[in-house]
Image 1 (tube, rainbow, N blue to C red):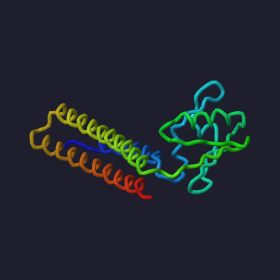
Image 2 (image 1 turned 90 degrees about the vertical axis):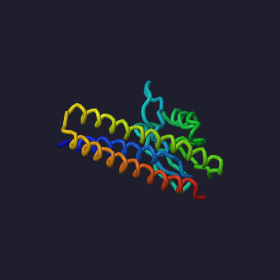
Image 3 (image 1 turned 60 degrees about the horizontal axis):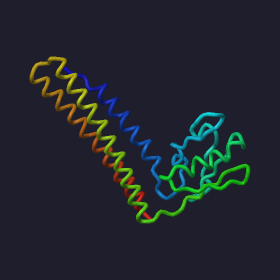
Image 4 (image 1 turned 120 degrees about the vertical axis):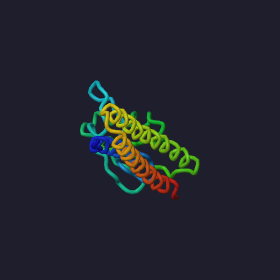
Length: 180
């Protein structure tokens, strides 16, 4: 019989990666993961923001960034401004950086949902790739016909289960984004 543990693990990894991507999507409220993709040029190389500063939430509409080295303040501000997908404008007082989170317009909310839906499609493609690899493994295993059909059905059921999980998480995120 064909064991689907490996495929289930692979699909779980795709789902976890999707969840991480959804955490980074802006919902109109401040969240430190919003800045997770920011790379700061510090010490002659590009480093993730969380390696050069501490990001905290001051309130629902403000992020507070405390650099480990105050010399990196200008580089951090520049890196945040350079990411046009966020549309943020940080300000600093020489010690900390304040990043106000502006309220989202209806048009901007729709753009964010569209971007998030692209991430949904990427996750679904990842799940389908795991399914196709599993089907190749099943074919290569040269199982009896009834065992092959059973294994393929298990893989298809697993694919549907994880695709449905991705869809439901996206629907929840979409509702959160569109909520004013």
